[in-house]
Amino acid sequence: MPDRIKRQRFVFLSLLLLLLFTFPMITVANKPVKVGGIPLLFIYFFMVWIAGIILLYRYAERKNHSGPHSS
Image (cartoon, rainbow, N blue to C red):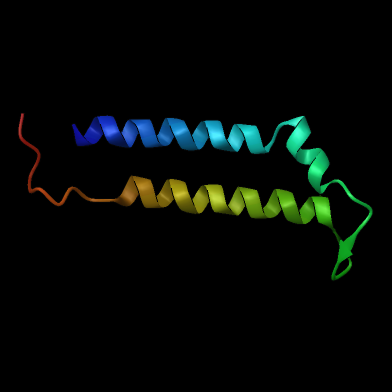
């Protein structure tokens, strides 16, 4: 059961990242604004990418608290 939940979380996160990198969501951040001299779109890409990596790492490294895996 925990493997199934972990797999569902990975699928959900993958779909969420796919949604955040599609055209309608990118146009939200595609403004002629610079933050610290960096275009807002680049900051959006970087933040979504980093958040995705961190969340995937946390889900992958999460341990089962119920004990050893039994077959």
